[in-house]
Every structure is written in structure tokens, then in C-alpha cells.
Amino acid sequence: MSKDPTLSIVLTIVQGGTYVRDFLEAVHSFQDPPPLDVIVPYDASVADVAQYAEAYPEVNFLDLGTITPIRAITSEAGKHELYDRRRSAGLAAAKGDIIGILEDRGLPQGDWARTIVRLYAETGRNVIGGAIECMEPVSTLNWAFYVTDFGRYGRPFETGPADWVSDVNLTYSRKALDETKHLWKDRYHEPIVHWYLIDRGEELLLSNEVVVHHRRPKTTFRELLPERFDWGRLFGEIRVRNQSTGKRLALIAAGPLIPPVLWLRHYRIQKSKGRGGRYLKALPYVMLLTTAWTLGEVWGYITKRP
Image 1 (tube, rainbow, N blue to C red):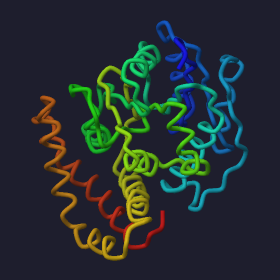
Image 2 (image 1 turned 90 degrees about the vertical axis):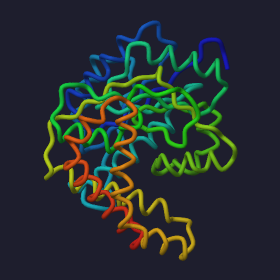
Image 3 (image 1 turned 180 degrees about the vertical axis):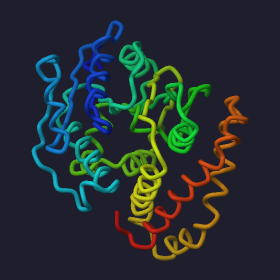
Image 4 (image 1 turned 90 degrees about the horizontal axis):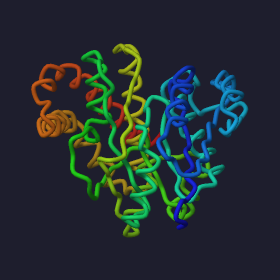
């Protein structure tokens, strides 16, 4: 790797609109960045983001045209498929020696790019993920969502090997990206890529120095419960895609145990970070969100459909 490698950043549009603009402003304000290759893949459903192309001529706004997902484009499952396909197209277009995946709800810290380049040089790793901080203030429900999705990535934590790193704050070496292209060329799924690399001896690194600040508009149960169910269903389908019938049936049978295990796990994580009391106040919300996720996950086991 050269002394100052090119860093590609693939932006996943989740919120869209001004969130994309704010993200690009954060990238524009990076401190001492390496050469950047910023890619914003978009399809017809979020075509309005192209309005920012003139203001950011250095950014590759990648027009994917119309994408028709398997499920309705208005459903949470349909939206997730669009996220996955945008990521895939962005990864294919990336030219960098290091390739990052970020999303428009997560604003990278000013030292994000320079820190990533340094860590690749220092560690020799091929997959590095980072911290995801909750941008305050947030409602109790929004914080409960953050805990159930990103709680393990909130600081403080020690940098080190990890079983999970999130595609909200994630980077690959060119080597890792090229070796897994057959897995993400149509639709990117973080667990599939990472399980493949781990099976081949790769060790994922989770760093507390690489930080994004996650912000989500104030949400409601009406929005979150279908999202949790559909995203859980996708994870369930992915998890059993190559499993034996016996293993799949065992996972289905264990389904009722998943929510209480998650409640306890989330509590232990938040307590270790000094937020145990806040977690207990949010527990009713956490219970509803994790139960919705589990119902979806088990349904994914049963149907084997994303």
C-alpha cells in the first residue's frame, strides 16, 4: 500500500435529502484527508439527491436508474433491498486502496479519513470497523432503537478483534473487497461477507478511534416495528441460507429465548458503558423492538425468504 492511499467512501442513502448534503459537508471538512473517491449511488426513488451534484463536483453521483425490489418499494424490506443494491453498485465503482461504507444518518468525525489510513498502515488488517455514537439529544424511543441496533458500538470500548462490525461505519482493504466480490456484486449483505472472511482466517478489527455520530429523525412505533420485523426477517433468512434442516429447526425452536437473551445482553453492554440506569428506563421500548425483530428473524428461519 502506498504511503498515502486513495480512500473510497460509498455513501448509503437511508434518510436522503438534506442528510446527504450534511454528510458531504462533513466529508468536505475532513482534517488532512488522503486522496478521496466519494461515491453516492442513487436510484429513481431518491433521485432528488442529484441536486447536490453541482455543489460537490468532486463527488461521483452514480445514477442507477429504476430499481424494482422483490417486495414493495414502500415496505421496509423493499427499502432495505434498495440500500443493499446501492451499496453493491458503489463498491463496484470504488477505485480506492481502502474502501469505506458509511450512511447518511452517520456523520463521520473530522479525523475519520486520516485515522482509517493510519490504522491500515499500523495494523495490516483487511477489515476495520468503528464506533457509532448516538447524537444527542434523542427521545427515549430513538435511544432504544440506537441501543438495539448500534449499542455495542457506542464508546467507551477497547479497540480489538470483533465478531461484528457495522456497515454504518466500515472499511475494507482492496484485497478483502476483491476477494468477496462474488458475494456482494448484486446485493451487499454485511454478515455474508464477514462470515466468509472469518471462515478464511480473517480477523475483524473494531476501533474506538474511527467515529461516526448517528442521527435519526424522531421516530414512532408505527415506523419502527415494521422496520424491525422486516430487517429481522432478512437476517433470519441470511442466517439459515446455507444451514441444514436440522440446524434451521433448532433455531426456530430457540426463537422464544431470543428476546430475553437480547434484553440481558443489551443491559450488560450499556451497564459496562455507564448507561445502565438509562437502559432500564428505556427497557419497555427495547422489549417491543427486540420482540418485533425476533418475530421477523424466526419468520425468516421458517420461510427462508428475505
